[in-house]
Each structure stands twice: as C-alpha cells, then as structure tokens.
Image 1 (tube, rainbow, N blue to C red):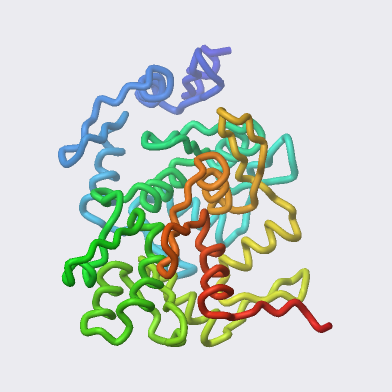
Image 2 (cartoon, rainbow, N blue to C red):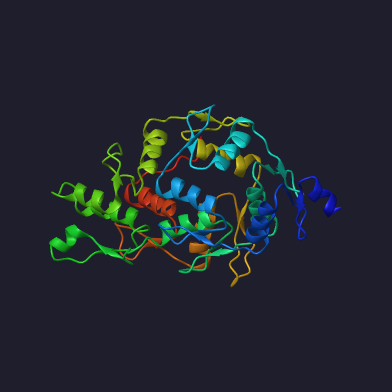
Length: 336
C-alpha cells in the first residue's frame, strides 16, 4: 500500500495517518510532530521552532509587528496566514467544526476544544500560581490573576501620604484591596485639604469626578473600569439587552456574564482548594477568586477608613457598611 502511494507521489507516515506529497515533507513532519524537535531558534528571543519558515513568521509577526495578511471582509489584519484563515472560518463563516463529544459545545478551533475538555470535563487546573494556592485551567486566567492579586513590586501595605506629612501613621492593606478603605479615609479625614484629590489619583489611578461629594468616590486602577462605571452608574446607559429577560446592561461583557450565570446556569469556575476539599462552583472567575480569598484564606483586605480595626472580605460588604453606618443610607426593602 505504501509503495502504491509512493508511486503516485504520496508518502505515508509510519507513525500516524498523515500522508505527505514529498519525501522532504514527510521528513519534516516526523522531525517536528513525532520527534518534537525545535532546531530553529529566534534571533531576538528565547523561542524555538521546528522549521525555518515558522521562525520567519514569528519574527515578522512578533518582533517586526507586521500584519501582512489582511481580511477582505473586515479591517482586521494578522501576522500569519494561518491566523487569517482561522479568523475567516470562525468569525465570518461562523463555522464550529470541532464538536465536544461530552456535551453540546462546539468550537472553531481544535485547540479551543481541547482546552474546553481539559478545564470543563476533566476539571484540570494545570496552571498553578506560584505565590498562592490558586490554580487555573487557562494560562490567560493565571496571568490575569497574577496581575490583579500579585502585581510586581507591589508593597504589602501603604501609608496615607497626607497623614505621614502631618507626622501620623495610617496604614492600609495591599495595593489592590486597600483602595476603597483609603478613599473612605481621605474623604473623612482630609476632605478639602490641599493635595487630597492628587493623593487619591496617585494611589488609585482613576477617581470618578461624577460621584457625589457625600460619599467616597469610585476608584479603580484601569481606565476601562472607570468608563464602564460612568456609563452604568452616572449615565444610566443600558445599551445591551438580554434576549431572555428584561435585564439590560451598560457593557456587552456584563450581558454575556449575565446570560451564562442566569439563563445558561453555567458554573465553569470550580474551586479546587485541596485543603478543604471544596466543591463550590461559580459563573465568574472573579467570584471564585473572592470565594478563595474570603472563605479559605480568611482574608479581610478591605479596611474601613472610618472605623478602627474593622475590615471585610469584599469591597461590596465594605461599601454596604459605609453606606449604612457612616453615611446613613438605608437600602430600600420594597414597599410596605
């Protein structure tokens, strides 16, 4: 059979079902697929590849930032022809050729299907955080976790610069968790002082200028969070309506999260905290991270800037505490 294929110009691989047109293609296939050889190193970074053409594509796309492969149906362009083909197939043709054998899910790429099986059905969490007990199914989720929870060179705590200038020492929790408590502290202790607003901006990154002066302003580290806050809270924008109910949202990702959690009942983020053998599952990764911090690690990172020694596990709980106790804002419990 193999001789017949060869006489017709085909070369079959003895280790799998692949059939190549030329002997050189077969040798390259064996070398890169079965022997896993990466003989071609990138001259600019530590990456290595199985073929010289792959190195060239890598250099053009990654280091030279070239986007030579433009989509004829939209304005998107790619560094590799294979990425363009995938884009056309999955975005414009809406093809989902890779179906899961264990559920109804289908995907545009084989790699996405493999990741789905590993993380959803096999419950694998191969990407462990080296700084805490968290583990994730996708490397991208681990990267987001590291940026949010373990920012590089972030101090374990920070002092209020306004108090320090006056000879006092008021300390808050880590950079991410201490923002709300710091904003409340500045609002209570330093409102109207010169440099108070600048201190908030320097520490929190972005401070909402539309929030009422009667309570601490919304603060965040990312511009996208600030844009979404203003759209949802102050402009009351609800441009993304749920097709299943009357709910509407300011941004599309919040709508997507709502559909997954409420209507599809998807809880793809499972807790695998080995110490407590926990089986809790959540619709959002952020909910899982909060669960681990507050339930398993018993962290109370959100300190009240008005009280001494009072801290909470979540920012929402701290907000409710400040509103109810310090700002005397009562929650509506419906008509009586």
